[in-house]
Image (cartoon, rainbow, N blue to C red; front, top):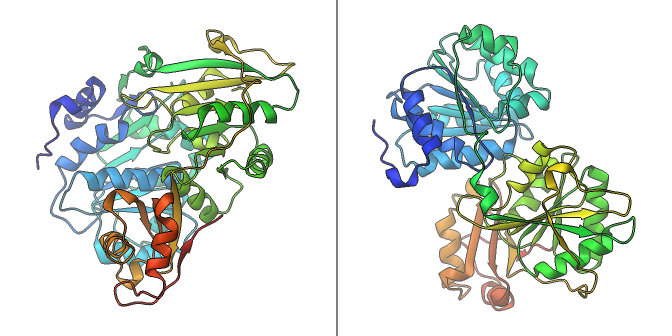
Length: 435
């Protein structure tokens, strides 16, 4: 099978990775965040998918979000084969039924959930001949080494192992060394100057008080309605800062590992869909999330090291886009050495003025289980709600409900027009999602 991707859309890293994976070698790809590693390994692996009703490729990822994003990249290749994301936070039996129903060739899974399915024999491992450990350094950092080792041992037919990382790995775990017999080709694009550096403007903002909240509010006011990510060092800080910003009238969401998964999903959707223009997050959001058009990254808490600094900044200036990064420096703090080139910026004279995002989220109380599609929703909102296609934004469809972003200016008129209307012959709740 040949996957047709225009050559001018591939970077040198992707071209080298595709060639190396096609050779059948075990390979480790080291490349910066946002450089397109998923597509780089997926193209050559999917070219050799067989006409089979068993999984053939297992991709281990550190988070649910990366599992979903990787599966979306797979779908963009428009292949006849199917893929399935597997992750915690939902019943294993539901996934087991999906495994049987769609017979996926590719699995994108978090370590614990994949191992659970393997141990329960929910699918055959006999057809899996390729294992990808995506963001494997992050998997190790999150404590998944034992699960990954068990997965490697449970997949006896694997002939090729692919690892990806955005950081250097000083020592590989023994189970990788043993399984690859020490034969691992390394493709590194980390030593090169990241092209992002040419597109990223870096600023240092002095905070006159120990508590930086007001300085953050002044800074966000200079950015207007543009999408901004505010990085903090602790979950409690994210909650506190998010509460302050909302209290001041800013359109902000919070994202960290201590939140319930559905709350994290809601926060990400609203930020991705531009229904919120500020996301206050821990470093959980610094890697593995694909959020388009983030204009600015704000380091509310200074990064502990250059690696964290790089990953945070990688949320903006992605691909060919330009971006800005700001470090808020407290009265007792100093710029880290790796950020000393930041240009000074004063924001204290800027009035605190929140900006409302251009989009707003509506909730629809029907989903995939009701045979509802994204096309059904868009058609309904345009035909019955009087919206134009450019007034309907991102649509996220779950089993029993859906979220849709629509133009804020058209919200009231749309909700009035569809009051009492049925969507695909079904009565349901359709309302603005406020929090």
